[in-house]
Image (tube, rainbow, N blue to C red; front, side, top):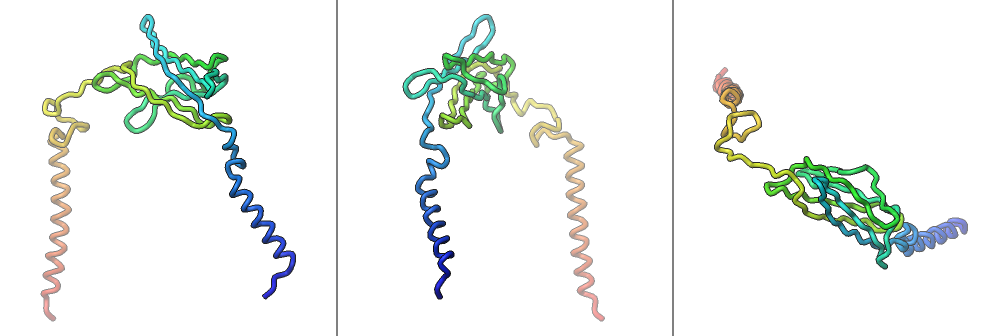
Length: 191
């Protein structure tokens, strides 16, 4: 079967276009112009004011101006944003951010600070993680000394809750056993 000439021409043009797009996909998405940035983090503490200082430079060591960085503190399930929602570097490539004094850390007061660079037009995405002891140390109580409460471990659950749940489970099993016993009695009846 021979295809019409216009279909052959369309198929060949389409295949050439797909090959060009495939081979030049990095050019199509602007990946060739992206370069890596370097972010260094320093800390300063004067008169009880904690300051986080982030400096951004390019591959040649020159400061990057108007680069947006995002600051977070790593929590149990996600990242907690800190500072202003939009932080951009000044003409020297530096951002100074006042750090909160009331963030709980681990048992030693350590916090994992995360600085992210993403969705930049000129630089690749990157993440910098630094641990600093600027958090409030948490105190973990001995579970054996904990009083009975709803949020405590199973061994220290309130007695009324234990009795209520146990009686509900027993009632459900009683009903299941009664239904099975009744079905067994029905099956034993002879006509």
